[in-house]
Amino acid sequence: MTGTQQYADPVLLFPGQGGFDGAALSRAADGYPQVRAVFERIDTVTRQTHGRALSSTLFRATPVELTELLEDEPWVSQLAIYGAGLAAHRILTEHGVRPSVLVGHSLGEITALVAAGGYSVEDGARIVLSRTAAIAGKDGGTGAMVALAASPARTRHLIGLLEDEGLAVATENHAAQTVLSGPREAIARVKAIAGHLGTGCVELAAGFAFHHPALASVAPDFAASVRNLPRGPLATPVYSPILQRFYDQDESLGDRLADHFTLPVRFSSAMAFLHEQGARVFVEAGGRAVLTSLVRKNLSTVDRLTVLSTLSVGRDHTLRLPDTLAELRRTGLATGDGLESLRRYLAPELSAAEFSTFWTTTGHEIAALVNRRLSDFRTAPEDGVGAVETGPAEPAGAGPGGASAGVPSREEVVATVRGLYAQALEYPEEVFTPGVLLEAELGVDSVKQVELLSRASAHFGLPPRDADFRLADYETLDRIADLIHHELSGHRLQGASA
Image (tube, rainbow, N blue to C red; front, side, top):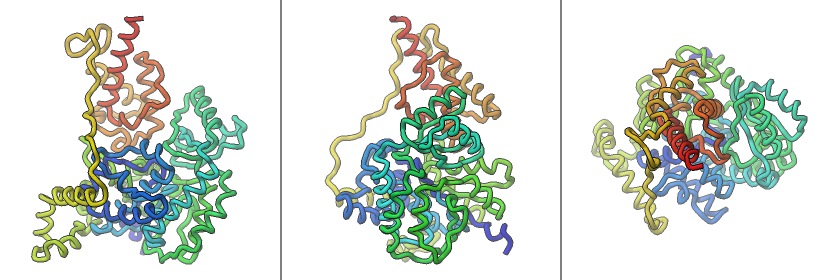
């Protein structure tokens, strides 16, 4: 079998830090019973260890955001990312997807090993809990991570310039993005000097400094805590961007996972290797579309490359998973609709085609009803309803079309921002439609988005934003234009009253 034939099936990618999208997970839970089933198994572990079910935090009337999870106990966000990856994997495989390779990014490597059959879902959750407790005990919340728009070589030069031994390269994502980890005060200095050098820089939504030499002292205890967990054979090959090789069937997975504490993630090298072996289809099994963007960055010159996401939202905030499954079916990489077990249980008298038609029209109603009844069964109904989100009020003195005196109209802001982004990215302006997702659809990573937004803001004379500004809320050109126009109106009014 040639390399191309061996890798004809998709490579599944499991994200690490930041790989969680609460809105997408909630939408998937309403239409795919596999989501709740996976988290129910994780709940059995969290009830034993922490006295509460993770599902009660994740599945509620208003989708939970990653920032909210990070404010909770450290294990909550880590298990949410882990569970989302496993849920996506289960949906894909129950729809007939047969991956050629599984690849995890940092925490996602645990997800990949569980998906391959190395551990049970429950033991995988225990490993995540042990990992989180070990790192939290050592780090104590004093560490942070920052992504730089720079190559690994340039980033190491920056470390040398700062002469700070507390800084370490944690991740090599692609030729123009490297992640550093270290103490918060050191990360603050990196951000300051990056600003002076004009290098894009954004702090990651990570609670600790992962992949850092300082974690060497806690790695042995972690290895001992997971070494004796029962493991099974890996039914699918697992390639490690950390170890830069495939896992062996007979090696100690606990010891290798302990090695992850101090070794960097070389994702760019992993993508180059898999491409050389013949891989051309990559599917991200997990929240958001972070890794799909990185694949495109690493393999930008490759012809016939297919990169798909699952638990992320596209235009009009619709779940991407159905479109991904449809594309995989169209190309013969998914051979089923994932409904056979449901058909046999609910309506064995119907043929597979008849049940598929039935589920397409009414499945979302059935899933929603089951989810409500499960919620009622597990917990008392929650009080209150989510607040209705409203747009910013029009500033006083607004003229026709909502424009204040001296403030460009929203249409003018859109046109200017589109031109700035197109020039900086060397894209034609027509690709910047109002609803296009900068990262998920155009491959503009978060570091570059920060740089572009700062450039656009400076063009309009706006001051720097507060440290708690949430870039994730402005993933389209439409929202960026709304933000800038609203800030311009408020800024001009403040100036008039001074």
